[in-house]
Image (cartoon, rainbow, N blue to C red):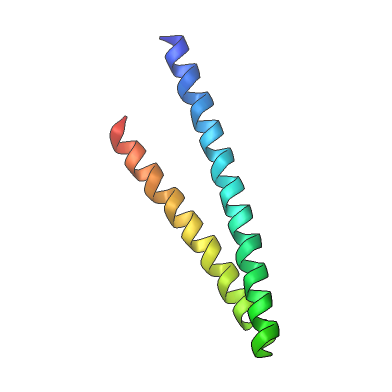
Length: 74
């Protein structure tokens, strides 16, 4: 079944691309929200770095969890 294997490979590539996009957008949004909170509370890079790291770790955790579930489905 060469067609099924090609479809699975293409689907995996699109899935990784989508997760890369999610990680990038979440990082930018949380970075901006942290910057705004730092401006409000006058606390230089505290919220900005904290929310940025939170976004990255949460996105990677969700990617890992989805990959783990898909691994069991195969």
